[in-house]
Image: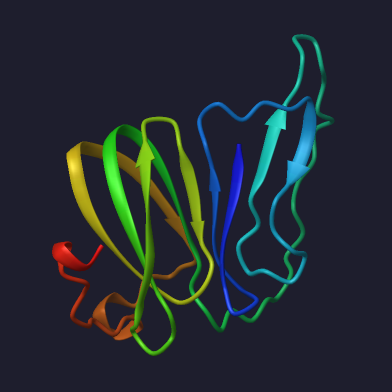
Length: 139
């Protein structure tokens, strides 16, 4: 299952649930995203020809991140660019999310292990603006 979280025609996130299956290669992101996300499913014996990537200069103006949930459950809260709470989703073991735009916050619902992938180099706190999140009673 694939879900897109959209607010006012702006893609906030793409969620790939653990049960998603499709043969071949499926890209979920538009070509202009600075972070590309694809699902790959090949049968035994399939050969991916050896290759290398060329040096290409890219300009990244917005950090997008991908989270792979290895263990546990995580609530993801979505916010617009003005820090207004919009909605939430629950991720579980095996789920993947691309956080594409807007703001986001998290609450760990069960002990979590996850892997995060985003553009680098990491600029530390200089690349974020923290703000007050939604109250649990307002979810």
